[in-house]
Length: 303
Image (cartoon, rainbow, N blue to C red):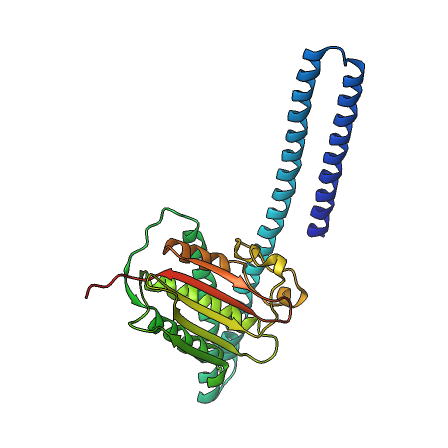
């Protein structure tokens, strides 16, 4: 109901803006026809007319953007609420079961493992929201240290494989480094969060079977890259640049069913840019899979 009412508001303000522009054009043309001999008034009228049209267009654009932004904020709040409520409900249910029933040691151990997993999910959601808040502060300094990017990516792969209980062939890793290692200067925790977010997305948006390829490669003497490719649902080409915006989620039925906060790719872009790099997405379209690439400046090492 709330989304439909806001769509009606968008249509209303758009129609209002068009009507006002049309009225302004009609009044200005009529005024010009009636006063065509007065050159000074004619010039002044044209200037005021242009200012009026520009003001109306800017006002209408601002209103529509604010309405869409509010819709994204509401979707984010709903997503975060769900991500917090679901594991809390699960933990409460298992605790009540442990309190009211006599269970075997094996059952108790299983319940503890489930509650720990739900606790990790809660922690990840909270950390993601906090990390998004930190990413919004562009002046925040990054603590730099020398990082072996290949080793960091392998650690992320091992962690995500264990988290999703994936078989060995689900995640394929390759290196094309030539001479030397892929060393970068950066914050290991932040870069680990960026790579993990991309891996997490690649797995969640794999439609049927998980097949993710990860490559760490040297672009040139000064840059290295991490490419993460999947065979999942893909991304419409018109939305490839929008997906890195805060709260933005791809408008597709399958993707809307996958739970998320709309912060993951925003966090990735913020982290990569703070490290002097860039990130971009490629996809041939829906059902064609997607590839996310991170470019980072290579650290200079003394010989």
